[in-house]
Image: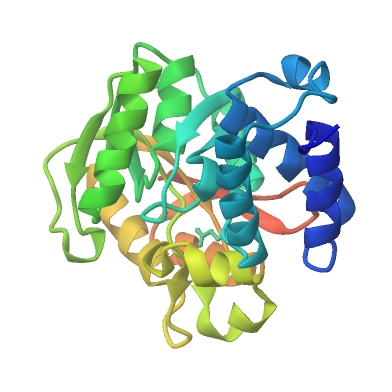
Length: 283
Ligand code: GLN
């Protein structure tokens, strides 16, 4: 029999990428790439093991394999990812939604009874705003970002998920107080310090938007300080502020929030045991 079967292609992928990624990850990559290119779901794919790949699909897969070898994130190659049970379009102008951010969304949902209004600052793909809106249809959700391309991606996701969120282009670092009020404010701002770059993987460092990730070593809490101050003007009395945070700066974050006039400050660890989320109430 000539040609390559799906099973053979998967084995080939494993050997091509084995020096770069762990085996379990390559298997998952292979499955998701094949599903994407062949436009089938996981069950259909399992029944196709001995089918031959046509030339066109094989060429596409070869291109993607090369990209994976160069550390291009799989989510950018296939153009989407799952977040809190929903599918989001992603591209290099937005951060790929992380599992720890799902944990933040989960905390907010379990902690609150459908607030009237909510603001997500630095929405990126819109993953926080849209997954909260999906669970709280009556909440008026607003989402800010400084990047036009991110806002476009978030709006596309809103259309695909049939959710109504108000997207606004706002540079939070240069935002004078607004007269609006929100019952809840959430943000996952850039928080990785330049000094932490050495610990980062090539797929993140070389392909994800640095404006969504990095802050200067000299003022790593600039976004948090600015947002906490702004929130004293636009958060309802006794309203809640939620942040995803840098795991090494939980202590500094607690002090910052206390000094800015918040109480009931609570820090939670993510699934990896790292200080990752913070909640504070305006007093
Ligand atoms: N947790 C992300 C990472 O380490 C960073 C997210 C962020 O900066 N907001 O890749």
